[in-house]
Image (cartoon, rainbow, N blue to C red; front, top):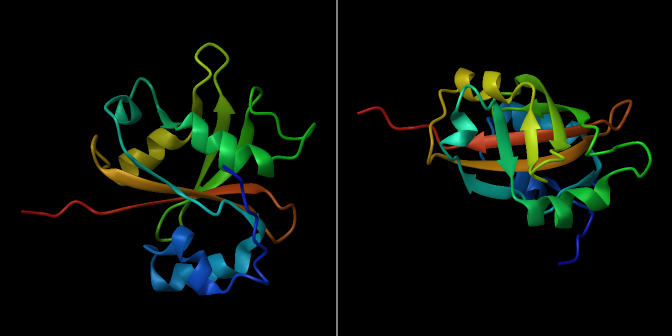
Length: 158
């Protein structure tokens, strides 16, 4: 699968909807201003597993093929190393920021967001089987830092 990187100058808001579609209107405007020239064109949709929301695990597993096909080509060789971990900022649908670490565990070769994921899922009261959509982009202001955005459907109150 070939990764296509689209610059924000060529990609109007409509094309960014794959990343920001479920976000609040005020934050959509902010996102369109901070998404840099590189972003993952195909977000990952995945149901949360029991282990994704288990307090003693505190990590969000990301599909290996998705990371290989859509994230790794956007990493800076020699600067960003998944085995050592990359400090990232993860945004929720309201624009709240959660510092996390994006890495590949050496023992299992599992790709994860950790060191902050627990705070994210507890804050949002996420549960196993809830579907999340994960996107990635480079922040265009300043350092072009790697950032993630995570959206989800809120559970209905009965």
